[in-house]
Length: 323
Image (cartoon, rainbow, N blue to C red; front, side, top):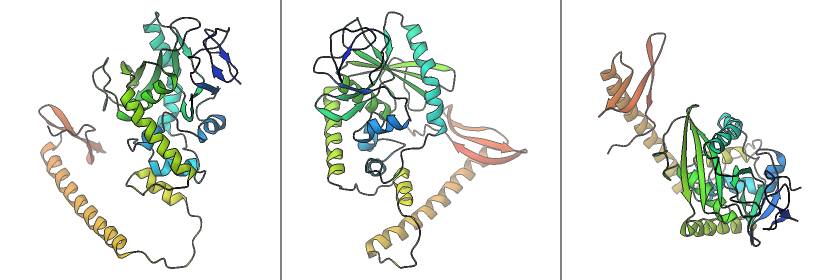
């Protein structure tokens, strides 16, 4: 069922039109279809995205998501593993979304900021968009811009306010939504560390959008043809592999020599890397002494944490540039 979008424009049937009706929003006549109004994370929301690729999923398809891999997403789309469980980070992002969007609207009284339904692209029903807010320039017109609200623990990955320097997976999400809606700009409003508000802008890029559509179409082909992606080193891939089998049979499974050698070599490399990490951390802690932080050229390198007056750990800085 199509619900209200701030009472500015109209939706006819299941496709957005540019004929104004009270209590709905519009997009071009050949624009996206409205799938409905869903609360993020609910069963209906997951069902609407099950047969397509949402904005938070295209980054996984392209191999640039810190949270999901192509392998894990493919298995979710096949119904072989459960939907992503809501993390604390996801929960608080959802909680803060209305207030972040309200702050954006307060700072931009010249813009008509409305809530948004879930859309599917015209001619590409698998390309799904669920923007946080729409910006409708005038009653009866198409949403020309959108707003995405984000939260972050710190400003790692976020550049100067007013630029398009945002984490790459968020950029992919913004461009995905713009492509579906045929809109030109996404305003990304972020709340950093609970109190620092910033805004960024991502303008539509036809070249990048075309690349993402190609990745998306190929991924959907693998879904239809049950062509499983290769195993990669993403944590989500490993968690998926662990979740797939149930129970245990008391049998031996023959593996190839190449796979055996790769596994043993990785174990040796990990052991050597752990030893080098301990040595490097020891050198820093020895220099820090009773201090709190190691810095170079006034930029943080690592922070010493203390419990009961004794060194507990050495936490690396999130930004690790050596330039």
